[in-house]
Length: 273
Image 1 (tube, helix red, strand yellow):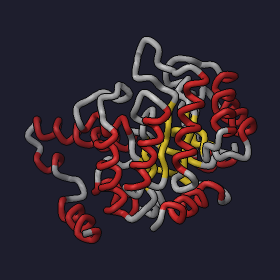
Image 2 (cartoon, one colour; image 1 turned 180 degrees about the vertical axis):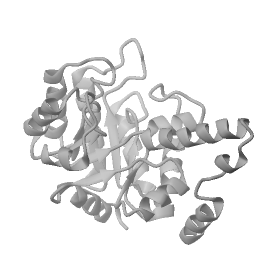
Image 3 (cartoon, rainbow, N blue to C red; image 1 turned 90 degrees about the vertical axis):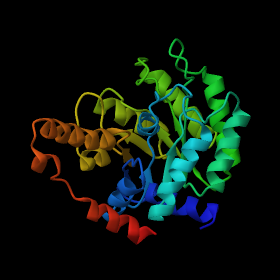
């Protein structure tokens, strides 16, 4: 599928009534399980990818090439639109962000997220003008061939400023971002204010507001058009591994091997080959 066709297909999922749930996978089998469950698109998780590689997310510890290769595996396995959670766009300048977008399009991704982060824990959020310039460069490079999500990490980085969050998201929309995202807004009222301020641009929410976990219908009622889970499904899988490890340490082989079985994984992978 050509970039413009993939853009239209993925964007249509955001603009239809209810929008979409975009679960985040971390390898081919997890992507195939999500596809088999009926999800129509999947996302990568920069946090899960960094953890898999034994690195820390958001510190420029993962390269553009590594993340693109990771996303491409899942896109090829499932033939679904894949949205790349590409941190700050992998580069110091807006031109670097544009190059990342070009590479993502070349490798068949349907969407790409660009954060306003810096990878510097002492000053984690970029200045407003720099953040906007990077999203503008991403949109210009995308040219409606890949869905661009403009994201501010104010809340994730300990900057609970709703006014600045809305200012940034509004500016991202004004330079052409297709989707907007502010992970972990503090409560549903803040989510509604964000959705209202940037309408009609679709808004992504990470799981729920920070104060309580809502259902997908509750988020849709608030106007949210995309719900993602970041690294939470990966963490859920590792929870099962931790429980199995403890059972095995106790000598309980049956409890340690009570999962879906490798035959199921083999069948999923074989069906995609």
